[in-house]
Amino acid sequence: MQKFLGAFKMQKRHNSFLFVNGIDMGFRFFDLSGFTKKVFQIITVFVSVCNIPVTFDTSIFGPVESFVQRCSNGIYTVNTTVVPFTVQIPCGATMGCDTEGWAGLVDTTVEMYSTFKMNNYDHKMYIIPAGLCQFAGLGYIGPNCTNGCRVFVPSDKLGFPSVYLHEFGHNWGLMHSWYGASEYGDLSSAMGWCCDTRCFNAAEEFKLKWSRPINVVKRSGVYTLQANEYIQLPNQSIFVQFRKDKPGLEQINQDFKDLVALYTETQLLAKLRNGETVTIGNTVVTVQNLQPTFAVVQIQFV
Ligand SMILES: [Zn+2]
Image (cartoon, rainbow, N blue to C red; front, side, top):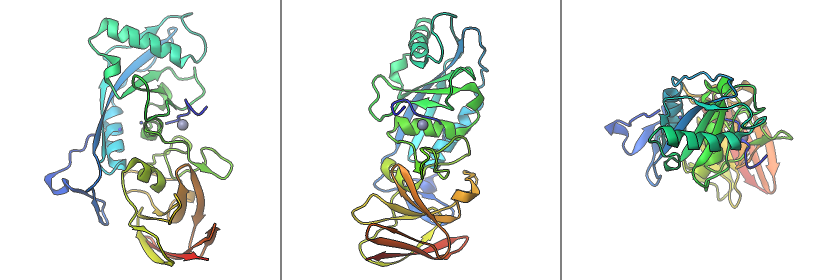
């Protein structure tokens, strides 16, 4: 399911002049210098299949746009254009959960009955009837999708911003975030199970160039992390983050927040609370002090 795995997509918040070169994270000014802001154009089509209705509701897309922009620290902006009519896929035209067949018919129909050019958009999003497919969402694995990256969202998942972030995450090249034996087990990231409201973890933000570590660790030492700050371990793509809800934005499962988490690009490796230690290779990570607003982490090379 790698190509099409995707279970989950974004407001325009125009930065005021004060934040042209940074974002007020509420605890520390986040320096955006060196980051490249990107704007993604999304075309969204509501699709009815064999007379199964799909609710035409565009009210989510403003909050979704806001969510993606805030999760990305203002780096990514998504602009959603909605085709103003529902495309009807006739009975018998396709069978089962035929997302590719539907999308082909939808693209042809939209271009026949409107002036929209589907391939002019970075992401092509199809809102399909609930119950026809088993997924909470489906997204092509990018970032190099041919003719635009497709995303499919069942209408019963229309109201969950993390669904869209998850699927766009696939389009941008992210994979699922494992924890233990569970492919979707990292409940601190939108790349885990649907549908709590979550952004991405430190490793995923780093990959997308949404943020940077406060330190790249070169020697044993003690590091203080404020909320959601992270450090990068040397010669390893491992990131140590003080994971907290981003206020007013996320609602992370309580077992996956207010702790120190170790991440790779595809995995939550460990969750550490006060006094807990984990050894990975020659590196020992210990949480010396865990407080509501900061975490003190010791890194030892042995
Ligand atoms: Zn997925």
